[in-house]
Image 1 (cartoon, rainbow, N blue to C red):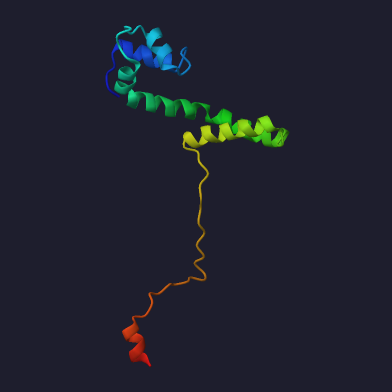
Image 2: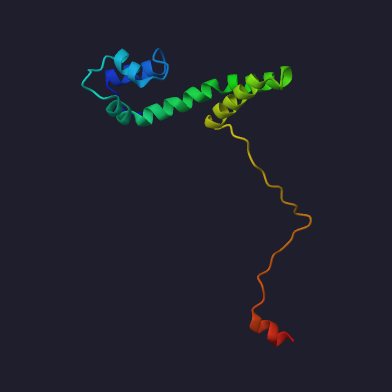
Length: 126
């Protein structure tokens, strides 16, 4: 990770802490001048913000997973729980814990698809 300025470090700390994800509030809490745009701060820290966001989601993924399982076990028909389940699923997806699609291949009965015969070959076969 590259060396950050003290203001950049404070910004990131505030963004994922007291500012609760609000970059404008994080800018103020970090002590940036009002002449500095939030866009310039976030552009210069885009890789760090992305990395910390991934880590934040991974940190909260167990809570999302537990909520999903508890909702299924306790009250699967509750409408509010369905909305929260969708949110929990999104958190898990973004943390890299997506449902994996698998394809099963039966090696006992293989099927081969051959290309169609050329029309000239068909004429010579008859």
